[in-house]
Image (cartoon, rainbow, N blue to C red; front, side, top):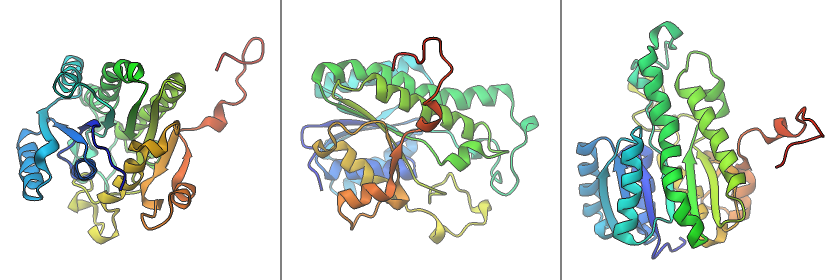
Length: 283
């Protein structure tokens, strides 16, 4: 395992199934970790679990509603004030389709069921929250010449699936945002990459009503394998990439694991020939 001694990470959605695994992996590598979530009771459960594993020295928890821009900015400032730095931002927090209806996987959600207020809530949590935090965190990362922004999106199938709104299209927007930020921050030392499970993961976002066997779902720990490599110094300069965690073999060499799981963020092949006065816009 790569050491992250001296690094500080902020993980959103930290009390969920994937978030818990990310927090634990970062702590084991020696990082200071601020675990942020809107669910205070589950944050307390996380802290107790980490304490039982004797990993809690570098952990602090913070209640955070990522849909609130002021809370996002205040959280980043608080992390920087306490630790002197925020090196790693993990945009993992998200609202799942269960917020609309528990049986959404067996009976897809029709547009008539989605209120404008619910649509706005999904956009605020699953899309705007990552932008608020990135905007707050990146300036200091640029000054330091080193930083990681790692965002959890979803499979292209889910993004384009009928009856899976607002979750699918909002995650597609998150993927596009990460692609643009990777290009914008290129050369500053701040890298931007995306991790996806690759299919349904064994978290509460896949309810029992789905009918899927839990043993057939992707273990959340899979997300930690590409994440920990991306957070390491070995990944300096690696940016604008997406990793399908289910295809990252933890027993393989890093080059082999990358070949099996890595691709460019988003849809770069669709952006190669724009109709543009003079030929092409500035990259």
